[in-house]
Length: 205
Image (cartoon, rainbow, N blue to C red; front, side, top):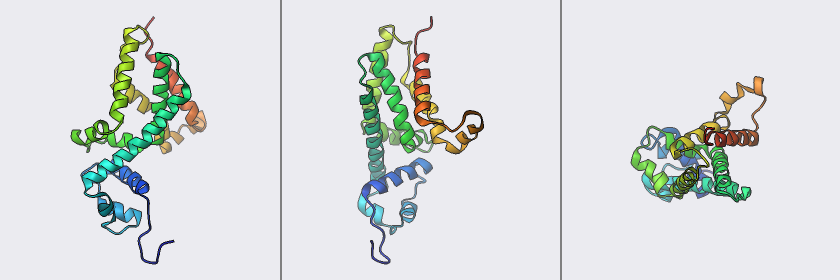
């Protein structure tokens, strides 16, 4: 327990995850560090003392978010134990959907119009996320050159996969469809969406 009148003790991880959500909601310029302190019940200088200026808080919170995303992404891929390149691609697509559904703030931040190109490159270029992009691009090209899939761009794959898990992100809107479909099941949705996306990449016959 904390002494009366003393700010609660919060771990760096908790603060960074809250900071990432705040950056994702507001964008970089509009995100208020003072407001974050208030939301967390901390004194107005606590976050800055622990993480430095806003730019460093941004890097640290993004790093934390990407680390969590990649941990889930890699874990899901390893579970598939794929033995072929096409199997690896399916595992990659499914793993991306699982990680995106569990860490929506990272996608929100990347998509935020108030995040400029330099800040977006911090997210992609200074973390392991960019490496995963390159690996996927190489895999897509190899499969296309082998005639196994049609020419597929990483951009379209990213947005199709992000859109597929939208029902898990926009829960209030998703509930509108419960009358027709019943409650959404995350695993079923991701499996069905993965199958659909994989079929869309097969060459036309």
